[in-house]
Image 1 (tube, rainbow, N blue to C red):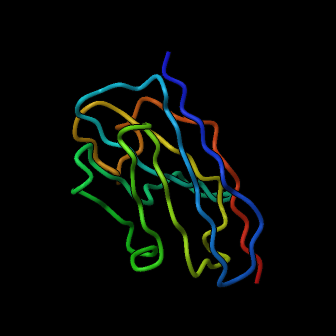
Image 2: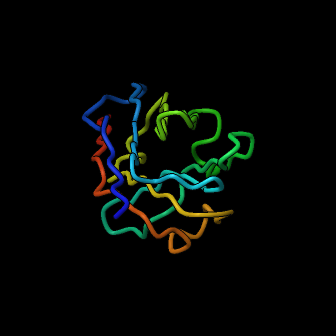
Image 3: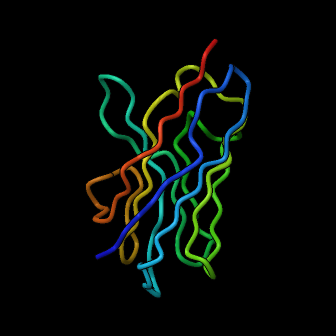
Length: 124
């Protein structure tokens, strides 16, 4: 059973920063896609940023480009999302997800393994 666990959410003011972490110690694929997704109040879940297993292929949703940076540590199966210049519209539950192979970040249903989420709240 793959267990995906997020951490690092919190309450931050406009313009602040947070770093999310995700570990999946039981995930041991040689070829996988890892990503961050979010779901705000009354909104559908959307892909925020994803990274391929090699670390060279990345995707960012347009609204976070230039503010968020995704990275991964293959040795520890840990995924990070550095979020800078946060805005109130970034407020959401943030989820980490992973799956085998090349998955589409813009299509959350492509991913099978999900964490329970970590809340990010940005106040103005």
